[in-house]
Amino acid sequence: MQTPTARLLELLELLQASPLTTGREIAERLEIDGRTVRRYVAALQEMDIPVEGQRGVGGGYRVRPGYRLPPLMLSDDEAVVVVLGLIAARRQGLDSDAGAADGALAKIHRVLPDPLRRRVEALETALGFTATPRSGAPVAGDTVLLLADAVRRGRRVRTAYKAYSGERTRRDLSPFGLVVHAARWYLAAHDHLRDDLRTFRIDRMSRTTLLGTAAVPAPDGYDAVEHVSRSLARVPWGHDVRVLLDLPVDRAARRLPPTLAELVEADGGTLLKMRVDSLDWMAGTLASLGCGFTILSPDELRASVRELAARLAAVV
Image (cartoon, rainbow, N blue to C red):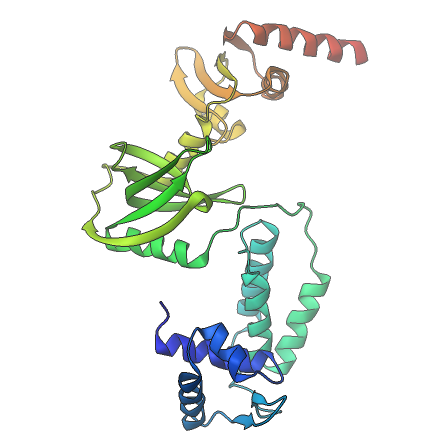
């Protein structure tokens, strides 16, 4: 639930974004009644913000034309970082369904000094990226903020969760950290239903609430990023692959991200453990490592490697 101060700020933003806003539109947007609308308008006027009211058909409220809030004082470097961060978040699929990145950019434009605003707009027009935009799984900002607050304060949360299989459960979680990977938000947590450490897709969580119960502490040396990476590498795809690489584990780790594979130091090299859907794709991945290897399982992977080798030999 929003506080009166938050609603007052939202009213100010609403009035600045539109040349005229009716009392009914304000009431519906802020989920308040007409009397409260008038009280909030009066509060803005008491702060010397020139909100004007127009009665009758087609009437409403507006901020006096020409009025602007004091400028947001950012240095050139700070403005570049803020704008770049918002654009990158949008391109990486981390924006919300409501288009929060565009909304934030619009607000920044309104309060930047004119010379800096024009330069920022030029940056947005001129900026390009070599990477293609991602289609992500947007999450509600209030959910992310609630989970972050729970992590910081050491509190449990309760949520409804829909698993990949479609199973729906109610979970009590002790959250340890938020992790972003490949345009997805993940929560690393202790799952009290399963009594185990688990990884949760935040876009599959709903009706999340903060509980008064203290969270259980994270295990000694626990790292949320490492936990989520290991969980993603263990996703149960169709084939369980085990390969011994003729490569030290530190060098193997530079060629294979932790979200893709588990790497274990072994005699004479590194044991690679992966789960994949395509053995032909796995054969290409092994060939790209540039080292010798011994396939331990599955046997079908040997056939995929031989077929790849034959195709490569035919074009040389």
